[in-house]
View 1 (cartoon, helix red, strand yellow):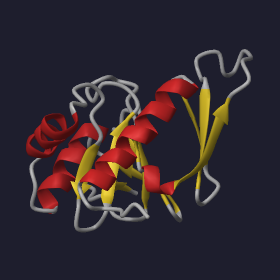
View 2 (cartoon, one colour):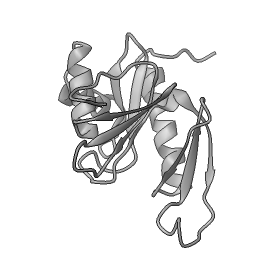
View 3 (cartoon, helix red, strand yellow):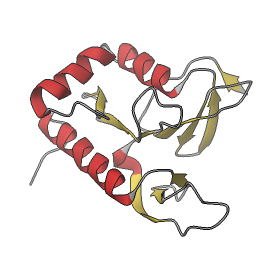
Length: 159
């Protein structure tokens, strides 16, 4: 079943572009996947609004406080502790949005014919695997940035 709109929850692990004629995104959740007729960026924007915030306002706040001007992690809902980071520029056709709180671990993908463009694999807390066309360095940097956003916004406490 294809949903017209989707609101991010704590069960949302990742939002990936579908490149499909019938739907625009695939959402990876704790118990499976959903097909959504919104782009990944539209899902992020819509979810911010559903949590009484504005995507541009959230983005501008992160830039003002932390100077993350490119591939800015977005605190979708501080109250619900929902933060997502982009793997590419938000409007890039291959951009995925990842929930860092649901990432178990990641590693390098061995190059072969099938994975010529994929470089890094994320393993989520439900053991779902997602191969991405970004370097390990980029993923590490985005994970770190997202955790700084979560820490500075009060989503998590440093002990």
